[in-house]
Length: 518
Image 1 (tube, rainbow, N blue to C red):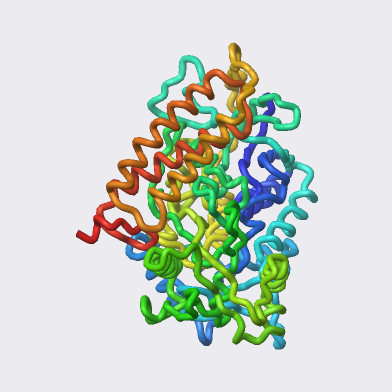
Image 2 (cartoon, rainbow, N blue to C red):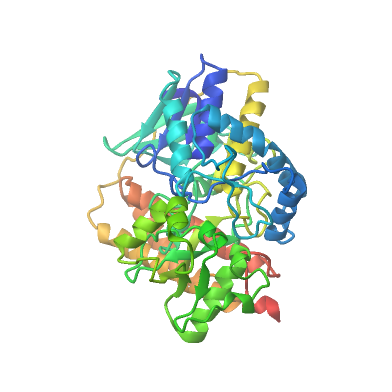
């Protein structure tokens, strides 16, 4: 048994911000962070655009940002949450700067603000086109300066510990007491007990295969919370980023930031026709759901595999200054943006739903909190406004910190059993895991993609049941491996997405079902 006052699962902006705040406030309390990859591997690291925070109060206002967020969320946002998050933005940004995060400045010394799809004003604070990477760097640097924080990389959280694992405990009122965690290098399963546990485990992109997310985004936190009986909501609202660099072989796709369209790039079909004005008055600056659905419609009409992003008319010097990483990545694929169009396709990018939390980040399970993309706060509604995600993580990490700072700290003496894998064997047929993974990803792309139908969703349930039964049988017999647990988690999350998609009877934001048009 490893004991911690606070257990954090995930090392992106949500988990690290919370860890830093708790450790600074309570130097005698122990914060343990577990993350399944390298310490800096998270969705945060790949966030290009920036943090949406109102700065220019002459041109912009909180009310404008609130309205843009509500429009993008298409009637599903919690207005009180939207107002709270946006108004706290400037203060949370100042904290990041104090911790050492650098953001681009203009010639007058103010923030060089960007504008992205769905935003009515320039308000996106950024560090070139690698904002998430810079935020992650600053937070990790601060974490390593704090003696009461232990960061365990290559440690995979398997399951939350609740009353279901304890003898003689009432399972009517559930609480979380920590987690079982696999030390991937040693191959042993640790029991980590904690007074409070924070799920900050990121997104679900790998469920679709074609995604802008890193390979760690397998919905682990949501699946663990679901198995622990936490409330999960709005899983049907998946944001597909309209412009991921198209690669014929598939896999994780490189993101061509929303800000490139904000900078003036055009979307064209292979004939060179600029099609977005046909779909929305905002053209390329429409919200992501509209742009993704428009591209999807163009591809279905033509049978093409991708469309193009045209940057050839833009100022190349200014482009390279704003988007050096994107420029270099395109060159790696022999695309010279001065004369070549960038082939792009929508790819799974962000989950707007997740584990239901209140404004203090509390889930429906005692002592269990959630923050970041794995949580459902009510901010995003049916579709996230660009660059609101880092903002949400910063605000909710602070709210959880404030809540836990006020409650009394009492150590519980519980007899938590160690992980029991007696009778299991080391799996030899890893091909079964890979086969089911590819089947699951193809199923989600083909049946549960940008545009859905009840017929495809019902067929998806039948196919998923076959995968589920095979995976569960394998899980009961085999010793724990990361790939097996990830697949199991992805199956759980796919079940939630399909089920909640069928329950929604109207099209909103990122959810579009052909049968809801009838």
